[in-house]
Length: 341
Ligand code: AMP
Ligand code: TRP
View: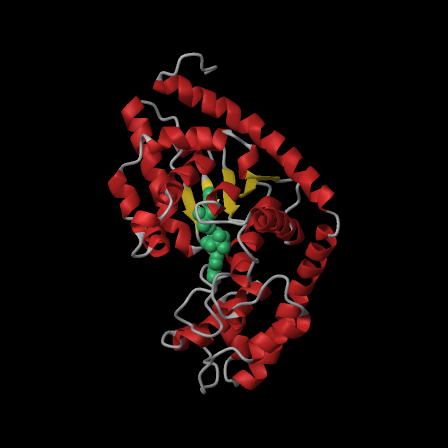
């Protein structure tokens, strides 16, 4: 398909479940702000319906959705430039998801790593929504004809499934209707690792709070977590290659590179030969410098949630203006009578 047939458009989503971490910031939020600032048409979504695929306390879900919206705005996503909303308020997502439930195959879903991880040994007891989750994610993306999806490494497989759904739909109905979306996984911090174990992803669901930096942590907590981060006894190497077998050291360097907007090689030139006792305070200062304004702005926004609610409502209206005609056209293509295609 000629790429030019689709205007470049970025879409991404984050689940409102618990706190945001440095991993979310570097792997997602910061890059969202960058793409918006490059002038690309950008749509960002708090995927509350995805969060519901595992049990959520209703009040906690409301709170997490607003806190996530505050995190987006505080990280530099401008609700005037980008479209910012919560998924449940744009019904076209679930309407499109039904069509995709009928396109996607059981076997495709069964191969999803996130499904296998989250359902674990107890698949019979997992919700049907958790299994169908990737079809809703494909709908999130394709109901806007989004061409690019910035995500962390862990979401690559879901974006590939989105491509498979688009390809099958286009083939089945004989039209190049959906774009073949590209995952955008770049930068030094596509996979920020736990501060306690360099082989595990930094995650809001890790039982140890010391394993992650939360965007709501204060300066002292951030500094303490970095000081206590697991490392090895060697000084930093002067080339990126020297980090290959040193997962914890590599993680801290990647974090430094992403926060300071440098390549890993540049960081190694600057920091090579330093012991962790020297490097960690430098990293902690940088992290506090970059993250403190974000947590401050999040706290300010959470002080008056009516402003957040207004921003989300307006975002949902703007999102529907794009999604509605694409859904109607899809309905028409598949033969649903009454569609305004
Ligand atoms: P989640 O918190 O799993 O809902 O993820 C929301 C977004 O943040 C997705 O784009 C993830 O790929 C990204 N993300 C989450 N954790 C990390 C991490 N440790 N490193 C990099 N990106 C991450
Ligand atoms: N599945 C993503 C996650 O768990 C969240 C998500 C839902 C998403 N819909 C999306 C990400 C669309 C990118 C595009 O992190």
